[in-house]
Amino acid sequence: MPPWIQVFALELAVTATALVVLVCDALRPCRARTLAWFSVAALATALCTSFVVEPAGTAPHGVYAAGPWSLFFERLFLAAGILGVLGSLDWLESRVARRPAEYLFLMLMSLVGAMLLAGARDWVLLVVAFELMGIPLYVLAAYAKLDGPPGEPQLAAEAALKLYVTGAASTALTLFGLALVIGAGGSSSLAGLASPDVAPLASAGMLLVLAGFGFKLGAVPFHMWVPDTYQGAPTPFVAFLSVAPKAGGLVALVVVLLHGWPRHHELWAPALGVIAAASMVVGNLFALPQRDARRLLGYSGVAQMGYVLVAVCARSESGVAMALFFLVSYVFTNFGVFLVLHAAAENSGGHALDQITGLSRRSPWLGAALLLFVLSLAGIPFAVGFWAKLFVLLAAFEAGLVGLVVTGVVLSVVALFYYLSVARSTFMADGRSAEPVRAGLALRAAISLCLAAVLGLGLWPGPLLAQARLAAAAFGGGP
Image (tube, rainbow, N blue to C red):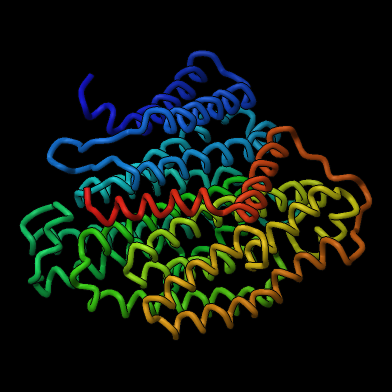
């Protein structure tokens, strides 16, 4: 067996799953449930196998390095894929029963692109993987183009258009910056950026590349697409969009800055600190007046990306490890809150806060799950989000970033106002309907997995913290 097959084993497994789903449906149309459960089983098998046989080694010409660092993210993206498929199953059966294979194929291929990012050590592979992750998202955002209450405008097409336009701008900036970086350095290897002397053109190119990555992160000032896309796209897809591409954008950013440009932090660290602070400020303040839960969570996501960038600004192994811990907590927490919101909205006819009031009376377990997820996002003990924010701020404090730490603490208090408004709507207000909220088996399973992760890691964060430190240590050592 060629060594490169072991290096790309998990990515090849997900690609094979996507092709099987598409080909089987083309030869003999299958039910959405059959294709979705097959995808979940294949992803779960790949995830479990990664704990037994860990991919390791380097691809030809050093373009990709597999090890604890890349494996950490591959496992995270596989978990996100499982949750994404489970959370979408009921929606696929009820809304797009004739097109489930295409939806699953696009989601799985986006997942492959995200999985490749962590191990990429060459500019060309990094950008190709970045676009492989991003392009399917434009189609998925418009998948529910006819969704929406009767008599009201359908927003999916608008959401997809805004995502596409900003994504196209992101690609243009990235490719133009890439041309400058490779042209000035004479090599497409990321290691070539680590030289002591960097040409001015390469510096300008790097800033353009970072701006392109910023769009996927949804960090200020590249966040314009976030609230509108979250409001218009299908909620199960938004749950995936809100975590996996952002984690992919962050890992690409970390690889470029801390692996390719570690000696030139004086050029990018101040700008990244400003972006982190601005994201926390804009995200939290703009979330306060929102009455649509999806837009509120969109601005919340902007703020959360600000916190994780604070850890990257620390420029230390501890900071990288805390950023990884934060990402895992964010994936499970944000996935959970969006899936609960989807279940509630499907039974109440909308996503406005006043339409999900009284959820705890209609479904006590969904109400309790939403409360726990919201408390985790707010950083309340002892959900996993509390440890995530605490560890990030401690890493920043150890690096001397006192201003960012104070900003983060103050804005965490501000965030309580809008997070607790969601909890108040759920528990302390009478709803418009008293009918029980019904959710399918797959959706209940996805919410339960998120709930178990948020609660379990909140009570026992040690194992995840150890894995994050191991991955950060391996990344610090280079490929």
